[in-house]
Length: 249
Length: 309
Ligand SMILES: Cc1cc2nc3c(=O)[nH]c(=O)nc-3n(C[C@H](O)[C@H](O)[C@H](O)COP(=O)(O)OP(=O)(O)OC[C@H]3O[C@@H](n4cnc5c(N)ncnc54)[C@H](O)[C@@H]3O)c2cc1C
Ligand SMILES: Cc1cc2nc3c(=O)[nH]c(=O)nc-3n(C[C@H](O)[C@H](O)[C@H](O)COP(=O)(O)OP(=O)(O)OC[C@H]3O[C@@H](n4cnc5c(N)ncnc54)[C@H](O)[C@@H]3O)c2cc1C
Image (cartoon, rainbow over all chains, first blue to last red; front, side, top):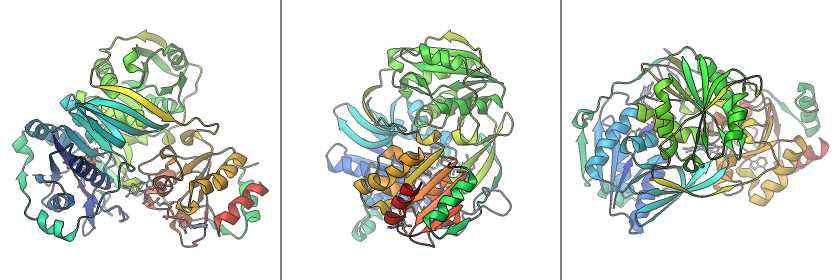
């Protein structure tokens, strides 16, 4: 079966985001951008399913600016077969992303769509679930284990109380959590090879999807800062301080 | 405005996360509740007693026992015909089902709401809490998940809601529950604990984690948390993870032991009232948010602290 893996270009997780002085958003000019870490995990899982012989082809998709090509090339270098860039400079909200992905899924007919559970910029944690609703498919969110057998997939999910396993009818949606796997690094030869793998460029209009945002950002501000406190020299001093604050008896 | 709040429950108990969601929804107007599950009449009765609630809709079916989103989302979408907003706690259950509902209603969800400004305007953290966005929705109906740490809990009694059964479509035939590994613990739950002791990579092993962190937590009557690094390394189970992509906590006291203070970890705990950090590196970023810092070897300091408390 074919696998579809949406990947998003986001601020690198090592970069500390800075709010723009005019309060209009986060400053992304000259900031290192990378593939969303959860999407690296999604690409890795897809490659492992292909290596196991469960999957035959991996198609990666990104919706974003021309530069999102770099993210797609990274996925191709890791081992994906082909890429689709849905190019737009507008901010596309998860609902619109899901609508575009639903159209692509209808065209490509994947057996599984593997997404990240959340993108580390907007932290929405929505796209996979929305896509599942639009396609009328089952969803295995926050996955730490994915096992395909026949026409179903068992997904172990990281939930608040621990772990939960569900069985989903294929085709289905999976969103990745941190413990699913450890993504590989692309080797230099594979990075070279990735340059010649097919990458199709489309636009949201090609899929007939209206990406007009439903949300308007009125302002973006810094969170209230915590003052650094004091350093104490000993456990006794720590206990004294805790007793004065009253939080312990 | 009339909101429908999803009641979070487990083994017949109504969870605290529901109470914070009720407070958030009350800022929008009338609050109705939805209890979905199998044999949940006890939960429905508890829900009807929550201060300020109107109707409590109850959908009972074996297919709803494990809150499978495929089965539950249609029930909510149907009820949204008569409600203006759907409000779910930002728990793994809420995060799993709410976007599915939003897409069924063609609404753009607003995740992790920390403040309600007015009927259309909400405040939410983005970029691991390094930026706080105020967003205005143009959708006619709203779908929100709300952060428990940002809203007071509504009182568990004083209300007199009316219970009403709703019929749903039952099993969508897409998914089924296989099993769960839910650890039973005597300790308070992480997201509602007053005190949390969290351990990081520095603990070095699962045994050391239990030998050093657990006794301190027991002494303080605290819940136990962990950094991602400690969970990835297998020192602690996944449900202990505090942070941007784990649990968001805001206890009275948070004790970070051998945790460096990466932004992803801070995102989950920096709203705690009092933060204590124990780390051998005096330049560790955790000290920038800690109210009280103690520099030194945790393997010496933590047992000493446990003993002297
Ligand atoms: C109010 C608002 C303001 C915004 N402002 C900006 C801005 O200033 N600059 C900017 O660049 N963006 C902006 N955006 C867009 C935003 O950063 C996200 O692209 C969008 O909201 C998706 O949210 P998310 O990535 O957190 O989704 P999530 O639901 O958290 O993403 C989950 C998964 O879905 C998949 N996915 C999500 N988006 C894409 C995509 N585009 N392509 C491929 N796969 C994807 C990935 O697998 C990802 O791991 C804004 C969005 C909103 C709502
Ligand atoms: C997509 C993504 C999501 C993430 N989500 C989360 C999340 O939700 N939560 C989270 O916590 N992290 C998250 N992380 C990981 C985060 O970036 C850090 O890697 C992680 O928090 C580090 O854990 P740590 O502080 O335990 O380990 P380290 O950073 O290795 O810190 C260990 C600390 O222990 C100290 N130490 C060592 N030995 C001793 C000793 N004997 N006594 C005292 N101190 C000692 C060291 O000085 C150091 O400061 C995420 C990362 C990514 C990429």
